[in-house]
Amino acid sequence: VEDSRKIAKKLDIPFNVFDFRDIFKEKVMKYFVDEYLAGRTPNPCVVCNKEIKFSALLDGAMDLGAEYIATGHYAQIEERDGRYLLKKGKSSGKDQAYFLYRLTQEQLSRILFPIGGMEKEEVRRIAKENDLFVAEKEDSQEVCFIEDNDYIGFIERTTKKKMPNGKFVDVNGNVLGEHSGVYNYTVGQRKGLGIASNKPLFVVDIDVKRNIIVLGDDEDTLGDTLIASNLNWIMFEKLEKEMRVTAKIRYGAKEAGCTIFPVSDNKVKVVFDIPQRAITPGQSVVFYDNDYIVGGGVIE
Image 1 (tube, rainbow, N blue to C red):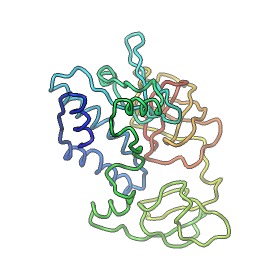
Image 2: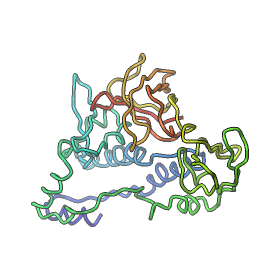
Image 3: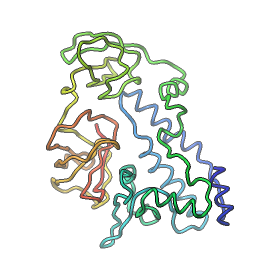
């Protein structure tokens, strides 16, 4: 906040602060904890963009008389035939459009991404030339509301309780050892399991009801099909028939070729050409048509 205040003063533009702590706690932090307790892996940045930046903040800006809000996301918006499309930013290695797939047409019509067509280095150079002291500020990497990336400690402080230990089992149900609470693990995890084995073991499944975590070989983490719900489409209103796209099953994943099939109004089946590693419930699967976001949903 102080960095922003100083820059606003230097640029001689009005500075306003909105206090969204309550709604952030309810919409983002509670969701984060609830998902881990349910054995799923949340994506708080996607939810924050939907509920805070481009909902609460947008409404607040409109109440001030603004016509648009502008953010520093590396993404681009194009209008085509009366529809707003979301496109990847130009900056290499910064596909922030992934986190924005839940935006509506109304929201997209009110948003500007002024650095979407620029490389990060160019943005830093312009900031430096204009004597903005944040020109060399480090990128934020981890979840913003959790210090030192200690999300286990955050969950336990928030819930004021510790999840009970349970059993590690192999894919055949044989007991391998004891785990320290389901929220300590995520699908595909290899490190930190505390299980002695003559081969690498990976988390294959998390069963909260039975309080067990299934471990298996690397190949056991592979899957070529997923179901996604809680969908949002950007290129069109509704997926009417099967469609060839590429998809990412998490932010850090590479795009992979697949076919998406409508299952119901709010569900799709995704079948990949090549099996994907660690398809993780709770994460967002985002669909692409070249550089454009088709839409996306939450992996069930």
